[in-house]
Length: 55
Image (cartoon, rainbow, N blue to C red):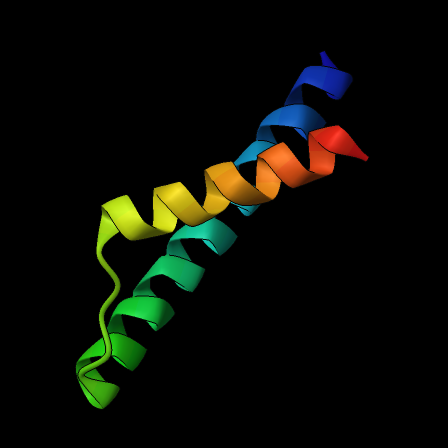
């Protein structure tokens, strides 16, 4: 039971950090006016994954 509670606390902490990074990113994009198209980002991530798998 204690282990389950610790796991839930850790999961919520990670989720909160994820949300905080997303909100900070949104604010930075609004401030700078620099946005990235989701398709471009996903394509770049696919390229990075392909390169990593080849190593």
